[in-house]
Image (cartoon, rainbow, N blue to C red; front, top):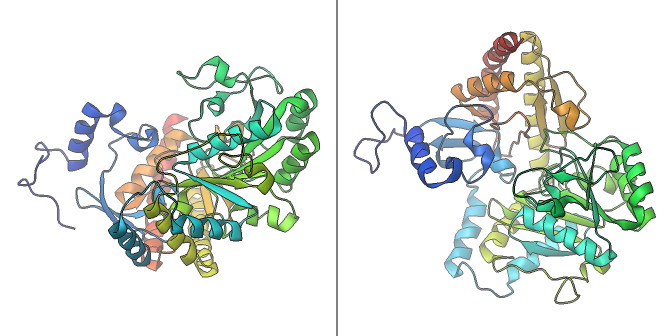
Length: 450
């Protein structure tokens, strides 16, 4: 891609890049210059790259630089960017109109595809993961007639007030607001527990079991880096909820159709013989468009309006363009796609561990299905406290060295790395070539911080 010329509108000031110029303009009209906080590069420093286009495994920024993309739009681009068959389906859908405010065939077909792949018996579409978890919790409260919600520290379920909570002073103590703007009243019915801690779960249910509407967890946490559930942990959660009359809500917004063809449930519940009461989806099922869903047991979902008394609605829910993109993506997401992504991930994970070990950088590489992340600390990482030990300064150095070498990593030490079926030998080799230098940069940063 040729570099922009000074004749283009809004040419950057002399000595600045177009990304720097755009970031300055964005900060003048948008809080922090971004529309989602992690994009601002605050965790790693420097100027975020403004992307002009993407194709396959590659991003192209406004300054003409190319990067192998290991973010994949934070997970949705399972098939890579601008997949020709997805684009063709979307173009045909757009040509028919962008929104009708009526039922459409693509939403029925996408719902059927989700039901066929997962444990859910009925599904309702929304426009974001936050809406999905918010609606699932409202439904759980309406179905059970209870109010208390249990979640885990380090699990992120969107910016729902009740879930932006920090742990109280004890294991079974109600939470406090985790961010300004969230009133105490929004979190006083939320319990925040340490992840992978069965004793904490048992203590919370022993004290509050008859008040707990639901327990919500990321099916395999990816928002503090990948912290897999210990063997049998999700099954234990499902059984505990069932024993106390609460609902088990599995948040698969990130893992759904990404960790495996059936999401994280395909790696544990489908094997162990249990199912969540409610599941939330997003990202992959929207094919890169703003789309999400929640679904579950038919008797629980029947409590939603217009069939039942629990109200939930959305003007753009089930948008025909978004559901068409999601349907095309899922239909193309074959076993071969997951095998390819898994093999590429294995190669990169092994190379990351080797490079960091040779540079003398403490590290832990953890995975769940096709998803993985790198902690710059000794492992294993079992919960948010463990994850918080990662060396963020070393990660920032590692990140920028990789970026300079043409690899775009998550701009935060606490995020998941994603690949796609478009990550071919050239893309993978670009990553492998960049790793030794980036590991040495991380080692130097570790020495400075020590």
